[in-house]
Length: 254
Image (cartoon, rainbow, N blue to C red):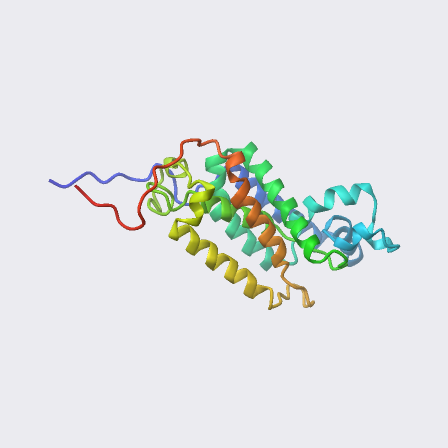
């Protein structure tokens, strides 16, 4: 006798509200910059809200808008700006993919706080690598890297997003996560981490040209956000039950 077919209880592209509004906010900001501001106004806005390590050197450069305000807000606001629509589009896709899984698990409040922490961690890592650089850093990639790391803690688990890909139940986002120490012993997570770090290290030797400029990929910010997501995940995760260690590979059926 054939088993009944269960239809997904949610559309495949149903996004958490916080993700939809986040993508909309990023789009609105870039549309304003692209179509409503003059080139000079956009230049001033970028220097006022992008992350610039040299800002903390107290250099006498008017465009840096040094002061307590920019010093405090730019490690966050740089994540709201993007180089061009391609840059924004790529980040929006990854935000929808990984941010959604995390938002379903965390809820809106925890998700936003986590995103804030990953964004600041990305800026801090970039500052440590380029403490005197005057080139502005923009983009949500640091935060999204944190989302990717956090999702890697539960996406391979039994009943998790990877095993129930395309199914509508939100239960797949609430499976117990791999403990941080378990990350070092789970080959699926280790493979994901290796590939991610490999891609970003290779990106460090290349360039991205969003506006015809020689704008480099701030891969150190990606690493900073990723490490924050991997390590700080447990501080935000509302699912407290830890899984029983399982051997790698297919489960035996009885």
